Amino acid sequence: MKVEFTAAQIAALLGGKVEGDPEAKVCNVARIEDGAPGMLSFLANPKYIHYLYDTKSSIVLVNEDFEPTEKVTATMIRVKNAYDSFAQLLGIYQEYTNNKVGISEKAFISADAEFGDNCYIGEFAYIGERVKIGQNVKIYPQSYIGDDAVIGDNTVIYAGVKLYAMTHIGKNCIIHAGAVLGADGFGFAPQPDGTYKKIPQIGNVLVGDNVEIGANTTIDRSTMESTKIHDGVKLDNLIQIAHNVEVGENTAMAAQVGISGSTHVGKNCIIAGQAGLSGHLTIADRTVIGPQAGLTKGVSTPGKSIIGSPAYDYNKFMKDVVRQRNIERLEDRIAELEKKLADLLSK
Image (cartoon, rainbow, N blue to C red):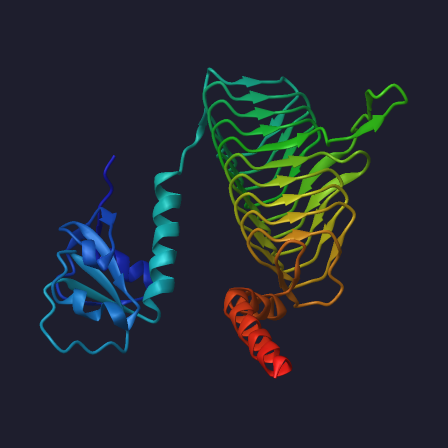
């Protein structure tokens, strides 16, 4: 279904002011340089001002202090911050278009499961025994919610998500397609005959409020107690978090990060793509870990930036990179000096 908004409606939502046709309509968004009729764009970066005068978009969000130097054919909406307002509008649009409600007859829901008002449970979703689901929760088709799981208000569980038994999800979370929370941690005890004995994993996964978990990310249940993902954490796609790990508030991780068992990551950390952390480490608050970094030791100083494998101080790493690139030139200089020294000694 195509949903249209007028400039007047958008301005009312954003607290902005219309310059141009208040009845101009849009049904989609586009970059200002790729604009077309019926599209909404925004201008925040001065580098893109020249596109405003040629854009075919019907409506463009601009900062309230913007002063055009040429004629603008698009309808402008002046707002305090065009970038923030555009993001806000996308959120409103997504909420509007994803406002699904109702329980599919093709979903399986255990008789003792509980769920609040305005929920959506799609086709072939499975809701186990004693599951508790809050208000306005959306569970998309083919999701599996294991026994005794808890899902807080306003959380969205996209298609194909698997929540093992006893997994707890907070309020206002988003879990993307294919994520698996609560699978067994990788616990095996070596035996004298060279085989491995499985260590039962009887804990669970606890996820706080306002957490987003990307597609095909996996978070293992703990051996005992809980693997913990605290409030505000943002996890990209294809991340592996092992058993007994704890991730502090508002930490963000990019794709393909791997965290080994029992490691504690602090608050407000940033971990770039493909970084790997060994087990039983403690990472201080506000640590920044660069791409493909390999950590075998913990980080005790808050706010430190590290990179490399094994990882060490970011500034020292960059200096070492410069030195490495100069090795060939330094070798030539040494060879030249050795030749001159040999000539002097021969005389």
